[in-house]
Length: 456
Ligand SMILES: *Cc1c(COP(=O)(O)O)cnc(C)c1O
Image (cartoon, rainbow, N blue to C red; front, top):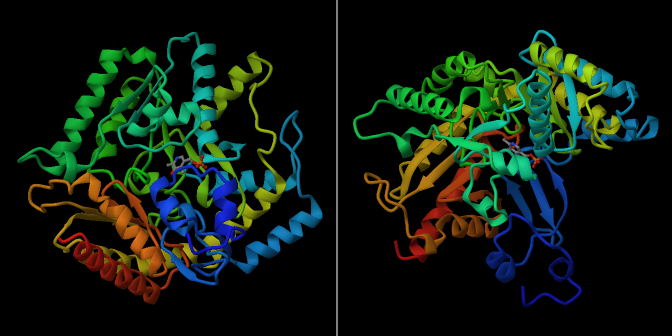
């Protein structure tokens, strides 16, 4: 960092950019990575150095960083109709076509789509939909939202309140009425002698107790990610959703699947909620919806919820909510093309073709002396580092082991993500088995180097 001149990109960044979700110690010592372009699953910095991005940007650049079909679609739509809103009953034709397609690929036979610019806004909007619905249905007290500890649902005041992470205490969040149920991570929270199914059943009993204690008629809805992403890639414990679903039905609690990471193929199926039998009433989508080439979030409402919302909105004359750029035709054209690429260019097929190799290498990494658990599904995986495999005792926090590994990997030209004590991987859907091998080879070498560096 110090060797770089004052007018370097890095210095200009440090002088002018305020970074979020960035370890400021690392930023200060190593400087930012300023990028110019990408090719396939690689990105290039201003010095020409290439990095394999094993995180698809932020889970979303699933078609790589220079997909020609997507780029051509952007250019064509930009010439045709680059921008319009979706207020006052006006809308771009492309956005109508996308809505039709999203309902078609959704688990719902019929439904409706509502557009936002991000996953956070989509979760926030869904909460407002539920609040309005219950209010108009004579249950204004039905306002509490249930999510899970370690869940990630976004960063707006409401979606951050839904997020079950300790850092939100920095903002005095969660807001009142946002409840966090247990995290379905068997390896971490399973009791001595408890089977995985018993664990799931215990969590379901706890959820019912929480609902009864709070008052079932005070709960507006429950939201869950099929696989927890930013919580460290945590697939649900066996039988978990099958155990909680009947309880939510029993108390008439709408169930929303936050598919922002899992949606559009990450788990190997179109929807994570399908893979894990969630049977949601609505789906929250974002990230991969445009393959990371445009900001977009969407709520796909199943028929029951969309009918009810239409009815109460008519009573109120309108659903008084909307984002200026929501339903933008450029984004819609990109999303339509991204779905075509996923379904017709064999992207989803490739996820299933290379996933066995990805999981094999992940589990091999899990044999490392300091790897407590290697877990994942499809093309998402994590390896969690511990001081002791059998007791699962954590490594000292001040070692910042995952941060060290990610920084060292970056030097070696691999982008991976430290999340707590875990290293998280989620490569683009175009990744090849050779690239998967290269990715894990670099990571294995990096881990050896780092554990040697810290004297372990
Ligand atoms: C990323 C993410 C969000 C938030 O999406 P943004 O577009 O960053 O606002 C919400 N839910 C899940 C599961 C996510 O992974």
